Length: 95
Length: 480
Image (cartoon, rainbow over all chains, first blue to last red; front, side, top):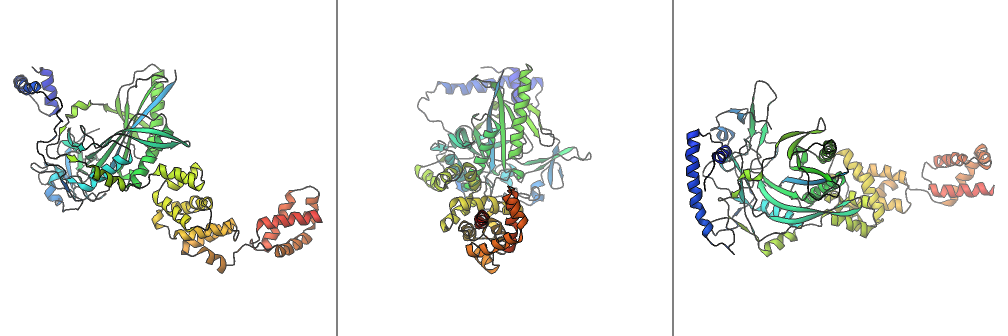
């Protein structure tokens, strides 16, 4: 299975990655190899097998609805490249 | 060509929990920005979400209240997208194995039952809030992550509604279910309950659906109704002029009362859903389901129909009484005390108690008087102890000082006079003193009759039973 350049560019866009032409070419090849490898699973007979959403056998892990302390605002904002009046500040997004 | 509107709704309700869905941060509305966050809801690397049991049970409650099929296993998925209100770059939601599916909600429209199917009910986390400063000095966007991770219930209806009356009934009924079950406070002005209608048009008789327009940013039930009305009109005009409508998301502008295109709807495959590896499955045993089902109260539509049937009320009365659970409970408490007919008490509830709540802007719980007071007042009128006009004065006094209405009537000497011999004396005096009105009446001027009632009521300080007064006046005029 081989991915087209267009598909690679779309995947890169969804992951917010900028690829040079050279990289896109290289990725197209590598991603195709990965997909080919994964495609081996198609050979497995999964008739009557329940879909699995987790590898562990644990289930029903809950916590009670009891508040615990939040971070100090200064700590929460510490790693932000930009902040303003207690907010994280990001480049303007317009809906 | 005649077109038919096909309307569905996506509903989001923030659940009334103390803490967020996957961490112990509080969910208090209106806290200063970014004071209710922790490494989990900030999306720091290496943290693990742990599900809030109460949030899960609230969601299960609604899935059951909406008659959904609840499978034994439910699981969570990552919905991937980049937006600054979502620090993890994915939202934990449900896609493959939703908590509830294939349910329905019965609504009442013009007195008739109508079924709206529910496609699915699932639990997810809310995103943060973005602020776009108006000032020219700040060209950025500000992000408050307090709301990030708040438990959010999503309910998706089938496109089963055909007009705004059905949309309105759907919203009100659903909101009442959320309030009755106590899972959400439903404050739409705080964004805790959000309705996003989607509207498409098709020629009447056509089976395939037209291009779906989803409307966002609608902050109240009235606004949703206006937005749907606007879309039906806009799309009808477009189709009539031969335009082809795109599938899109539009934003409602409440000030201008119109919608405007937002962006082309991305296909759902772009979200690249995959099972959330940080959360384990939830298995819902029969016992657990039965236990949660047992906590469901009588739901609004059932209550409304029961009120109509058991108490002989009209559709309107039953609807008003059951619109708020505490209001309905108060009414039933009055009935349990008795002393007046269900109809009479219903009238007091709808006309006077409700008006008082609205005027004072208070909730039923803050109403100053116990149900026994309202029942007693209704009884005083029904037994003829006081007239309706006097009763309204007693009501004002009753709520002002939380006093027993019978005691008010007694201490103020308001009891209605029905004693015929006493009233007859007054009538005789009035007839003697108003010879002109008597003559006018006999000459065929029926208006003169009222000119005779007035003085009788004045002489008895308004306490004479008006029915007895009329009867005696008529009798005496016929005799003389």
